[in-house]
Length: 103
Image (cartoon, rainbow, N blue to C red):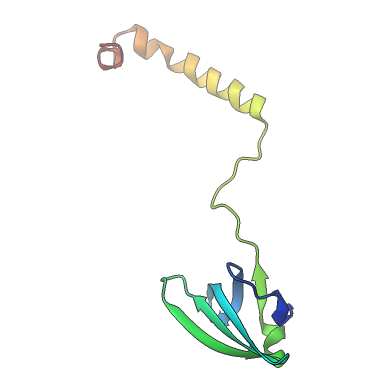
């Protein structure tokens, strides 16, 4: 559960649309109990919704990470890369595929 004060621009929120995350574009407060949330859906369409304190339990801020990341051991990556390079080196020496690599 979040508080309405946690809705800030560029935050990703679950609970506004069913089965979709939205990105907060703007928040305009009306007193301390309500706000107008301007958001962008995954398709890029912008929409507004009024939110009240009783809506807080259904909302969740989602951490948006990179679609991929590499947190592995760098030395192990170098070892595996070098192993594959050596394993494939005979293709270049035999002339198979080497004509376009070194011409």
